[in-house]
Length: 313
Image 1 (cartoon, rainbow, N blue to C red):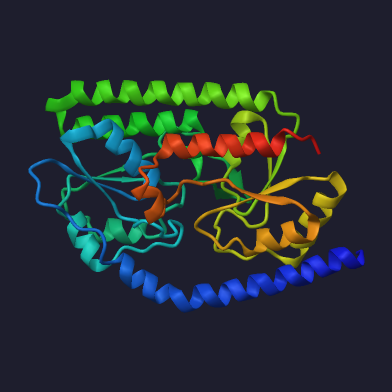
Image 2 (cartoon, rainbow, N blue to C red; image 1 turned 120 degrees about the horizontal axis):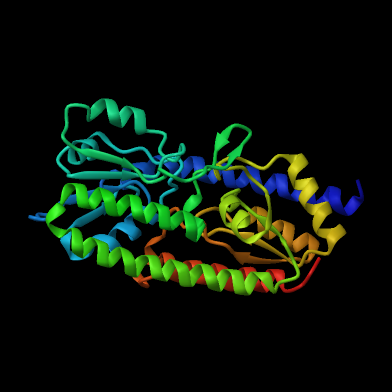
């Protein structure tokens, strides 16, 4: 190992340790705050809960003004590790529908099923019909980042809404057609743009982009695995640093919800530039206040991918 690469790995390990201590100290306060933020408004409409932001956004677009949609993972929360409070479970029991992602995204699912087994709540898995990618026998739950998988999710949401509210079937079907058309346009823009880019490798913080990469013939090189709270190993940090220097990679990607320190340290020591690639599992308060949604963020992702891949390694 060269002296420069050894220095990079040392700095990265220090950064990871500092990030871990910070996250541990703030975790309890965050969990308490999140448990208080989801409430059921007074409404005569069917109440639909969703487990993560993509399901919330898709359901809002398809359900429109005919349903009340509430996302149980609050803004800025890490969806992989979120646990619903007993109070939230009680509210869920009074709802018409719970849409969950599946593929291991909701670690609390079996406990929720046991708690709500006497409830009339309809629970629907949005991943039905999706060909799941596995990594070391673990299912990858980040399929919404593929427009074609998002379309399947939307169809499952449509059928669930029709089941709980058949009188508004035509309304939901019309909204779904609009949603599907926007997904087809997004897919065409991704294909047209990325096909023209000479680069194919992207270095990412979190292994969330398997489905996107599979769809558009890209290769992701992650610092961490499917669960972003896992720490990168010294071996992985060394491997990434060597790869950047060897192949002269100019960009690497970080994410809004996770500490940028590791990516920033690699960038500083290798001369690469950090861009954002949003996994869309959760949006923060600022993004929601700005009115951002799935389609806007996916297009921002496309712009950053184009910038990173325009220069062939």
